[in-house]
Image 1 (cartoon, helix red, strand yellow):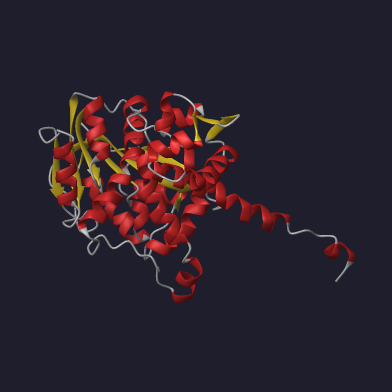
Image 2: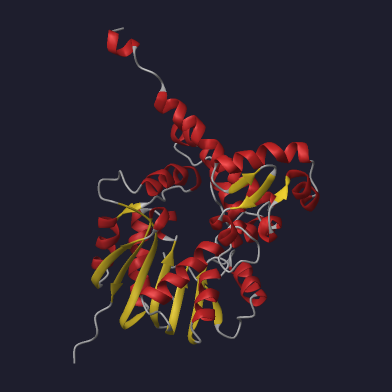
Length: 336
């Protein structure tokens, strides 16, 4: 071993080991709903434990870990929410994200199988919605609603998606369609989903009181275009579950259902063409190989190519937080 090697320290190794635990502490805090009792003001561990019905001796280490993770603050022995936790992790908040804990627990657990998935060539934690028990399927789909709601707000504000007929392709529990309709009274939506998911969609749309404005369509866009004509088609977190060939077919079939001048929005993890950034999209691909047979976060060039091949123009990429992007294209108006 040369002198340079002897002077090395495993700093990168140790840093990555340590980085796991703040995220796990945050997840536990979301699962326990520790942030909601703190909404009305600081509490001691004993007071918070009484609210949650847990033992203070077990809760205390988590609370200090959440301080280190930047999710709560401590003054003496009293813990309080940060401004961010108050806005996003208090149940009942309009921007509540705490309900995503089920999806994250599932996805992070799946990532522990990465080596086995690569060795076997088969995803070891495959998401098979056709065989998933109904309560589990509904919980997973519901866990995606917070992100879907954020997408709806972005589409409504930045792209003036506030009227017309919208197709939410692969819309899961219908969270995006419901949120869009709540924001835009002049808009109606159709959620297109596979046969095994549509019972969840119908139940969730009914629970939201949106059955008159959100319809549910049982269809598979890989196979062919959906019935109807739409002013906008949204594909959120859909193409990333598919092979490249199926994704290209899905885009073609979505475009076939667009009215002239209509827009198609692809929302999902999007890699730069280097495949080295954004970091969240690179990391998501490690997760995806454990749950999808062929799905992945695709590159900007791949998305642009599928939209262009399907006949769309004015294609743009709009980067979002967390490695997400909106790639949007417009169907040309007919001549004359």
